[in-house]
Length: 112
Image (cartoon, rainbow, N blue to C red; front, side, top):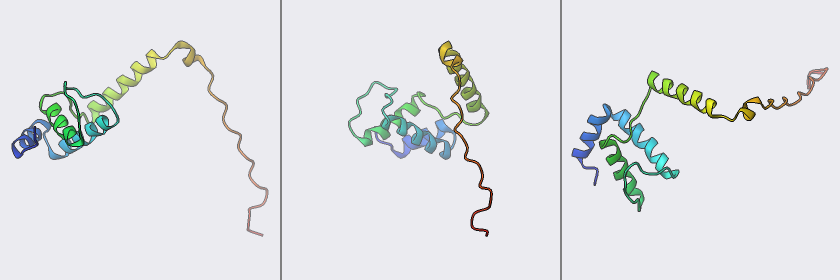
């Protein structure tokens, strides 16, 4: 699937704005390059395939960009879920002691 002007128009209609489409493409491409699996059952052979894959994932509703208050709400829920999943021992472990701070010099340096 090539990103034709028709495909581009469909992606923009699905995303709602050019900004959102560009950010969604950029973030999803970064995830794929870092090794996250595709959300569609395809084999990726070269970089151009990533563009086509991301376009198909967007058009099929597999990925979306969530921003603003809704994104913040999801981040808080995810943090609470991860905190609840921590082992009890890790939560009860004491925090490491802060590093010692050197005392301030008695005379300001270079002002004699």
